[in-house]
Image 1: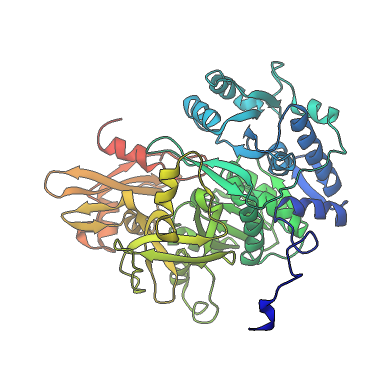
Image 2: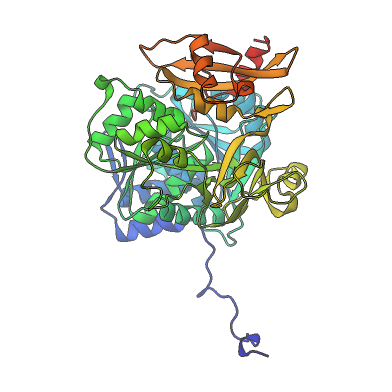
Length: 540
């Protein structure tokens, strides 16, 4: 028997084991960087001491209103300081944070509030009508705390956030988790094919997500992060929880536009931001009058949809270093990254570099793996051709779906989280999405990847955005139909787009028809393909 088999006196204790929680990041930052700038929003400038005080007061305010550990506190807020504060303030009183998409309809918000059981909801004055309509159909209704902002004054119908903070106890003791498996956040899926599912995060996963992202994003101390990704989307990819870890500054951005982004880059020295490909598209297509110059190196994470290689190539010319990442609500945001391989990849021409960057990549440091499985449950060969379902496992995978054990069991089949995304594994181990399972077009018995067709269309200089969906066809069953949004000042025709794709792809993959116009998008920049499917079937 080895000497370590006798572990008498080696038990876990308060000295050698503390439950992991991202709350510790802010507590530490306030101790060692009390005067360092923590948050910027217009003329608002908070130090870490002020940030910590406001978070403490928020936690005390919620506790004073009757919130106890395990309760749910919801928000209907854009990327404003109160939303950043809630990332820490809600769990600091032991509660679970439920950030709700501000672009949802009242019926869906009603469902989320009822299903999650929120006791209080912090509401930006712009979205007060939505909140009131949603709360009216919840029994009992959650209490509304109104959060006014410039241009959106208080209504006078509800307690005002700042007033409640002033009255709150600045000495409130944070309630830290006894067990890192305790829930920290509740996020709801998009619900495009039915009722949204409630995804539950734990403190351990949120903590490790911050650690892994610092490594993967090559961060050093004192970065300046612009929050472009809505903080209601996967808790902003956990970036608000991460920034105190490195003494960074959060630059809030309420309205995501090209001028606002370029302005923050120039005026606030932003070094990092994340955004969907539509955000990148807005930057590369911005007219000269909306652009500002900046001197710093800007690291950009993009996710939410496979970014077209053409867009990535254009971003490079503007001075952005783009890293493609991938994940889902169920995985706290991005957990797969395209790690750049110096050497051979550096020698590639611009087009080939962009193509390499468009791959999803490999697992993050806090993940145990990413795999592509065939229908029989075995991994597909790493040939870059054989398709299967992408799956992940590791510490940044949700606890499960709230009050939905069947869906949880199905998602975790075989000990992996099943993403529903179809992809391939390349010989170097990098995975690449080919399509969502529901987005594959089966034309005459051949599988057509909508992502592949979209990538070909995006190489057309006149195209700003595009989406390809299945159109019913009497002969082939279904054929590709392209929806195209053109760049400002550019023109094209259906015949031109079809010919452009035919030069690049097999005939059966070529769109048989094209519709021009603005594409419907979610608040996070994803193109709403379910809307386009309805259009092409003539239902809307």
